[in-house]
Length: 293
Image (cartoon, rainbow, N blue to C red):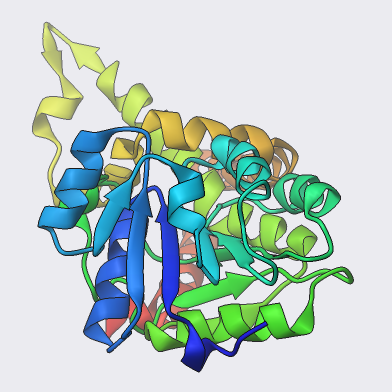
C-alpha cells in the first residue's frame, strides 16, 4: 500500500454536492494526481467536468479504477454496498475504498463481509453538507474545520485508516474516530432525528388553517431556519432513515418525553420552570461556537 503523499489517482463515484466538493477541495489544496469521476448519468459527469471538480469522467467503473489507489463512494447510502461489490472486481491490490454514508452499522458490516484481503475499506462520514444537491452546489471549502468521522472496527487495516485520515485532513477537515454503533447513536441525535422533526413541523404547520387562510403563509425566518433541512432530497434521506431507524426511533421517544414535560409546564403555567427550560436551551445553543462565531 502506498502512502498518501504518493497517491496519483483518486476515483469519486457520485460527483454531486459531496463528491464534487471532495474533488474541488483536493484541487484547491494542491493534490497533484488525477481525479476521476464515475456515475450513471453522463450529463451529471459533464457538469462535474465543467465545474472542474474532476479531471475526467467515465461511466465504466473498471476503466476508472485502472491504477487507482483510492475510491470514494459518494452515492445515496442504499447504493454504496452494491457499488463496492462491483468495485472489488476491478480494483488494484492495495486500493483503499471509503464512503461518505450517513449511517454506519449496517453498511460497514455489509462491506467488511465482502472486501477481500487485498483491498481495504474504511467507513467515513463528513459532517458537512446542504439541503441542496448536485455538483453545482459543491464548494472547495465545504469540509474546512468540519468534523469528518471515521468508523474503524477491529477488522480495519491501520495503514488504510491512516491514508483516509490524511485524505480528510488534506481537505481541511478535523478527523474523529467513532465505532459504527456510537456514530449511528450520535448522528441520529444531531442529524437524523432533527431531519424527521423538520419534516413533521413543516407538514403540521402547513395544515394550520382558519377562515380560508393558512399559517404557513405568515412564516418568516424563524420557521425557515427550523425547517431548512426538510428541503433535503427525499431519495437520499429515505435510505439514511431506514438504515438508522432504531436509533432515530429512540431519539424521537426522548423528544416525545421532553414535549410531554413542556406541555405540563404550559398546562400549569409554571413560569419558573419555563424560564429554566428556555435558559438551559439558550446556554447549550450558545456554547456551539461553530454556529455562533
